[in-house]
Image (cartoon, rainbow, N blue to C red; front, top):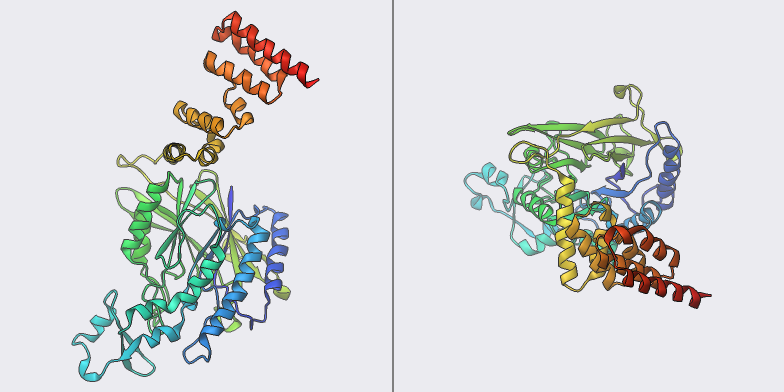
Length: 488
């Protein structure tokens, strides 16, 4: 299995009554508990953080920029230590998206001007509800605002992106990760999982609380993931929940998620509602298509922000090897701010739920062979790396799947091993040799590696079957004997 630590709504602030050390300690202590539970839970292989990294600042906050920078400094310290302790410091295995609390409300309002009554659009309600509208209505003051400084408005999340840059600075192994993007792409589990990490705060500010991901952003992320490799599982991460109570507007259009399902995304991770949940969502196109939707509760929101009956918490998601099912474990904060299993009566006293989804199908309705697609994509990339003079990169790509490689892939890996002088890999790939030339190369490589016993055994084992001529055999055995003598 592959295990993901899913946390959300951290609301970090130096003024929080739970310090970073206490929070990290509580998560580490709970890891020791769930490793020994029945059923035990796999140690996390990756971390997903689905938004609201900091508490944020309200309108009118004095020194708002300094306060936000202070909060992000606290958050960075927490996430860096969490990364070190849970995924060996590998920042490519940490996925981060922004939430509504990551927006600087003051900057968004400063980019707007009040609209005079005489300048109101004729269809005010229609104009406000139009996608990408620049109008905002403030229900408290009963005033209409217009975003007049669009470039300044786009800077309302600069504090988040500065934190984002600091965290990923110098990180290797990232698929496509950069500040300010409506979606970033990650690869997990040696290329088996492709992740689109969406910014669901499109158009969100001090007056507009809804979540939104433009449909073209979802479409482009899917196309880019398809172009990047044959992932066995596509996963989406965002912040906002997709349904809410009456008289609330702070959730995301469910049709956006339906579009993800139809494009092959099979797990969706989000937060915002401060309540854990895990449920399948289905649409029917040519065939039924299912996505597992998983919401994490708030890791550290204030007591007045936690819904009635909920507690601070997080999830662990164990994805099974077939990448068509997963088990979601719910953990909650209990005594002395420590986490434990969140046992629920609705689950028969269990603290987990099992979810399955339908694999994407081809045009004929057959399940897509994702492993074959993945191998083909890796072969194509490996060939490109080798032609570009980067044999090390080709070797890193193909060596983990050496047992699955077709003949062409084996030749690529052989050439990479030769160019990097990797004697051990060469001996492995040439066992058994497929031609007399490969037998000769294998023997001479064993001699270079001073593995004279393996060299002699190879000649005895493969020489007759391949039909090596006696003079070549005698010459190779003489080299083996000379090598042995020099080593004495």
